[in-house]
Image (cartoon, rainbow, N blue to C red; front, side, top):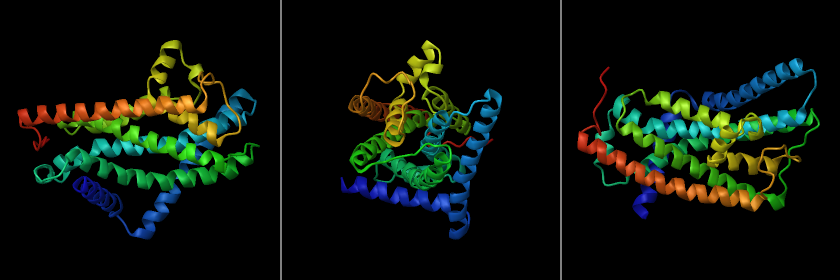
Length: 285
């Protein structure tokens, strides 16, 4: 257990150094602040365009959109982080052979590297939400996080991030057998989640088959319970028949399932790559 923790801690530190070493610390801080604020302004522009087309302001829909996009920052960053580990170590830095043969768990190593992405994303989400408190208030919507809801918020946040890591490693295991084009997959999968997990709009807007896909993705329940905690209203998302604990139970069960699946798929991808001699094989084109 001590080896796992040391591996995780060192990998997280390495990931942080790799993410932030491209510039001076003060410039990295400015970048970390400006990026989420710029993203918030994009959402405002989207809302203004929709408002101008419909001619009717809908602050509740804007709040729904804003909170969903704020927490979707975790999705894109974490999934890209897990996808990128194997590719960057093998193709860019060509260090995977040295890391892989060291006496550590490579699965835990990937978790640690991806965790650094979560740390960076936390700042972006906090800044986006802080900006949103004042922005949504101007539209008459007050975001709220009462003390009695804090435990539920942190538990759901932990489960949501954990299932993100599990999904990322499940899909990232395929990069053992892929060329450097796996970055396309890392961008496509979050796009699917963006549409089918109720980030932009409630699931009820989707056709029946689309709602079925959304209800099968754990992130749908994470976004649902997060909005219930932070927003003083609920739109019809198709999940109104479930209370908070039931939504949390769905998230917990799916987290356990994807965690077990991630281990199995990772071991399978690792085995196939070792048998084919592709663990450290670079694409070279």
